[in-house]
Image 1 (cartoon, helix red, strand yellow):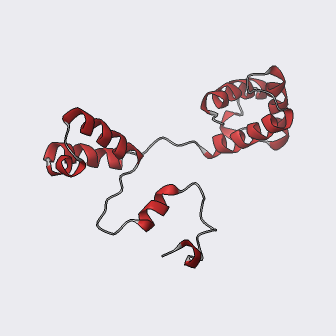
Image 2 (cartoon, rainbow, N blue to C red):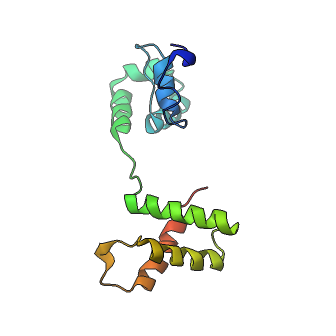
Length: 142
């Protein structure tokens, strides 16, 4: 189906390339996910076999199946929300994430937006915010 005739094309996530690839591929083609394709490339370079030859061997087929089912740890809803706040602060200040003014402004925004989990209420807000800010810096990607 051409993109012009697909009424849901523009409402989909533009970064979801896998769904576009799956829609365009025929039904008999298997499209591996990220983990599976990474292992597949590694095995292909190690053994010198093609993808179809690898899938015929029981040992490699089991390895690929296990890798396909493996899920990544994903970010929590709180991490996603606070990363959005951090991104807005960085956009407003136009400074690198390591700058002390960014930290100061982010802590103010966090207190204004009540972004602190209730499970941490037994600790002081400043202690939580400082440790949580350091955690966010580690997982932040542009």
